[in-house]
Every structure is written in structure tokens, then in C-alpha cells.
Image (tube, rainbow, N blue to C red):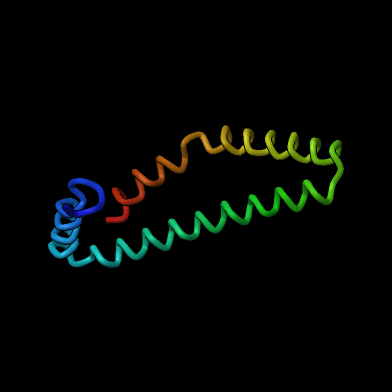
Length: 96
């Protein structure tokens, strides 16, 4: 009996077939892996920064920092108004 996730071999073969059928599949896969690794590194760096700020500041100062950081994130979230999603949808339409 093979170990692993049931159906994973079939999924791998379908993925390989899809990548072989499209000539840009390998570049797309490499690009997405690079983006994922960059995002993981950014999350790790943000966590390390939070730990460093928490250790260097006192309880009250870190509370102020967290309060300001949260408000800043909320303001940026509202300010975007879905522009990221619109750009992903509209740029390919008008770029060709």
C-alpha cells in the first residue's frame, strides 16, 4: 500500500499534463512559488518586528503602537475600495 494522500498521484499527473500542455506553465509555477515564498518571508519579518517592538517598548507604549497600527490597517483597507480586485480584473482586459 502506498503512503500519502489518496488521489495525490492522479492530481500530480493532471497538473503535469496541464503544465506540459501550456508552454508558460513552468514559468507560471515558478513565479507563483516565488510570490508565495516572498509572502511567507514577509509574514515572518512582520512577526519578528512585532516581537522586537514588544520587547523594546513597555506595555503602555506597545499598546499605543498596536492601537495606531490597527487604525492604520483599517484606514488602508477602506481606502483601497476594492481597487486591488478591480486592477486584477480590468488590467488584463485593457492590456490586450
